[in-house]
Amino acid sequence: MTELVAARGTFVHPALFYRGEKQFLAATVPFVLEGLEAAEPVAVAAPPDRLELLEDRLGGRAAEVRFVDMTRAGRNPGWIIPGVLRKFADAHGEGRVRIVGEPIWPGRSSLEYPACVQHEALINAAFAGRDITILCPYDAEGLDRRVLDDARATHPLVIDENSETASAAYSPETVVDHYNQALPVPPGAGVFVFGSSGQLSVVREFAVRYARETGLADSRLNDLALAVAELTTNSVLHGAGGGTLRIWTEGEQIVCEVHDAGRLIDPLAGRRPQPPTEPGGRGLLLVNHLADLVRIHSGDPGTTIRFYLGR
Image (tube, rainbow, N blue to C red; front, top):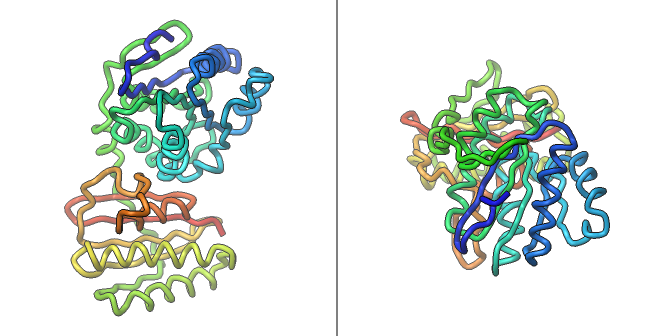
């Protein structure tokens, strides 16, 4: 992995296409050990079976590595940059940091996938100019060809069993735009149109009442109320003074969205940790933290932010 050795201030973001456990370990174990030998902090964020596999192979050196269950910490792809990657990297500000991050695995749903691939594209902007290497494994046997094609577009370097090559398809901005998809609403959703700050408590109560009546656990009602409060407040302040809330059930989840006439022009909104000394900027970040999934569509008709909570 010679191309993973980078000069100071260089972000390195390769995709690793592996087939089976043997290839996974053949690439990730040397990557981790090289980092430890260079006194670089190392984290591995992956599904539990991959964590167990790597931890077992590392033996006694596993204690030097931070292991993170991506199926929990990264259940919402919008939280991976601030809550997993930046959290680890920012805690080790001096020198290069290494992370193995596997945010897309067989079993991720088609509903989650657009947010996953946008996350992979946005990593490049989020860490530009930083001393970090993030190696992203992809199960080439278990994932669709479309996923691997998208990985070539979101990673400047692709590693497989035979080679390390620069990706001719690398174009993360194109991927972000492509998956900025309209979000259709099913019939029968609860609707509340609000037009001033004086209605914020009423629209929040409307959403909480709907969620309670349709089976959202009491332990999650506060999460819903906080997320609705943040999004509707943003609409009043930045979205032409108001917007529309919609809420419905979808399988075992409560789905809620807020639409307004504003345009979200910063693709990293909600993915940057906010220092306590800086006012504002935490609304969408908090929603990403609370929700099981967040999907966003922004265009000429305005911006829709949709979040999912398991019941």
